[in-house]
Length: 113
Length: 113
Image (cartoon, rainbow over all chains, first blue to last red; front, side, top):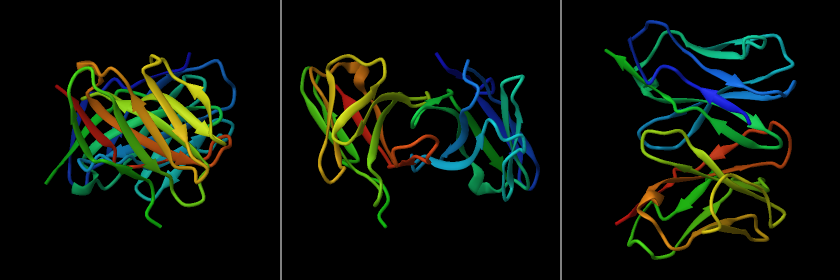
């Protein structure tokens, strides 16, 4: 069974600084998708970034980028130039075919002014 | 486009009662997945509907059942409610296919007393 582990329950960062959230996963599959979702206090899950395992290039979306290490089964999220609106729970997720998501327990990120 | 809509937003039920939660998927989506998110935890997969059939199911008892209608909307039913069923229930819609993006609703907060 696939599992996703987020080892940092809480993190904080100063506004405009950079922060990295960690995620490791376990799977025997060779091709799969990985995601980072953001859940603000409004509760709605919002997709931040996704990575397809067979693509070696790390995904980037504006201030958000990932460091995907397939051999180490590691998928960390880097947030650059942190903004107050980035304050939220962040969930790392693995996708089982076809569209089932397995989530980690989340990291609560606080951006401090 | 209204995105994924869920109703009701909040619900309080008594132990032993039955509850029905509703989800309308994003326009154009044909697949609906349901997740349970306990306080302070990541979402856990309950089941998934495509073409009005349950396609995949997570580790949840038979008290949890669902339905998908011809217009792709879906219901989640929980019978014989337990205190432990108190959680945020999230609906996600997507296209049926490997790696497609899942869009989430704002969830229904169920409290069992």
